Length: 146
Image 1: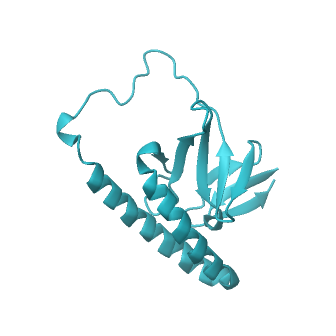
Image 2: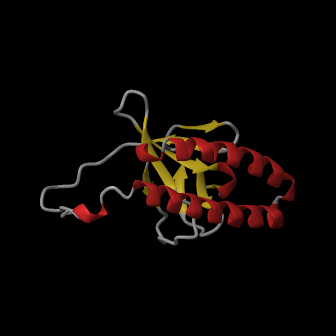
Image 3: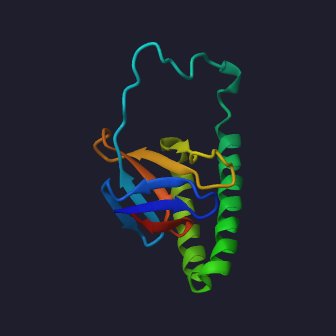
């Protein structure tokens, strides 16, 4: 069994226990399942109407976070696998454009440490609208054999 960790924070992100596929040589898409929390465990209660209509600011913030993460991964790759830096830069730039174009479709999650400098996992749904999957940056993970 393989476990995939964030190279920045060391957070466990996913394992090969779930179906995963490599896309464009730059990200992993990992199929997952949603769970239902029992009644009485309400989270995210309330609304903030004044926070609506701030989509543009969110997209700009997401771009800044993504750029910061890309820089950190590039630095880490320079230390550990310098031959992969160019591959990462080229693929990440192209795939980041896809993410920004579909920004409104994603939900965002951090690792267990909640370190904002670590990888942000992107949750989306397959074409059927039912099957959830996470997207993880391939070069931002390291495999650990269990």
